[in-house]
Image (cartoon, rainbow, N blue to C red; front, side):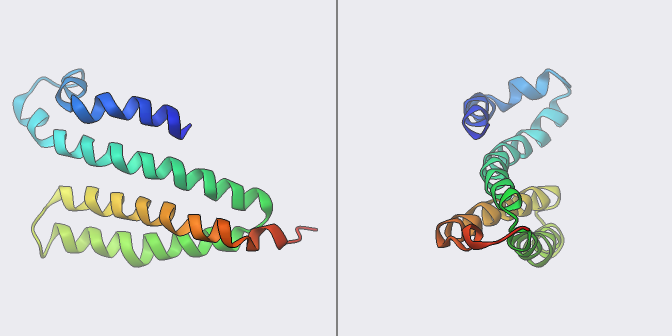
Length: 126
């Protein structure tokens, strides 16, 4: 699925205005949503990688790893970063997009070493 997402992501990254104009032709809407679409397309690629690892751990019975990584990336990083980027730094709504991208990237990056560490292989489900 991540490979298919990557193929779909390239045109959306290169021509975001075209895809946005399919839904709205108002210049202000297209102008405001173009960077949003680019940020979220990259976040979706990280989301795909993270979901593959998340499901691998869940099916293997290592749900604690998924819970810890999600807690660290979402509660301790993504939500505070969204507030910080949006309010004190004044990036406004794009701050939430950048925070979401950061959270998705962190999940994908955290899962890779845990996967190769191999603790999930030693978990007994029943």
